[in-house]
Image 1 (cartoon, helix red, strand yellow):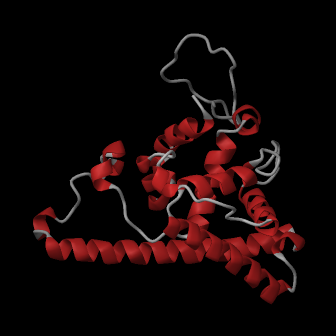
Image 2 (cartoon, helix red, strand yellow):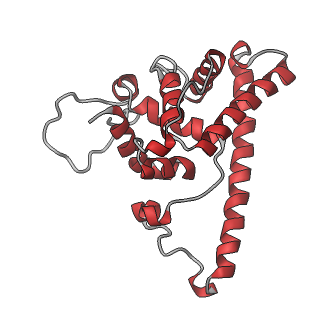
Length: 223
């Protein structure tokens, strides 16, 4: 299994935590020729910015963070090779907007400001993304309710586990920079060697299968 296949599998395992844009990308498959962009999508400064944002999302604590796991280059590769053009444009626009906000508010480039200042900017961006996504979802629900019998307005796949992200129900929402970089930071980190072996409990050659194993207080989850 190559790394991209592992990422697709992780997308289903983490389905509830991923944005609709990323779920749609993995349903279309990482190898779709329609999502591959020729040439260079990010310059060196943008690559550095991506790496620093990922390292704020998953910083070094008791285990190495996103930067040590090489998540920045992974994110750049995935956006370039796997995401559709509208998502790529939204990502680059959001990346540039974050840099401009850093310069406006702190008079420095994002990689040059302190971790606390970076966290402040990303926390604000996160809240804005949550609010915008909720407004979009509420608007979509209202539109669906007007087209459907009120007694059947709820999606038949609501709360149906993996059935809710089957291709026939592939979510269609506006791609957002923070959602994409958060998704890919999680996916890149927990499919990396560092994420699987340092942040999680890892058994190189597992023994018998145990369907339910209680975790002790403070124990890492299994990779």
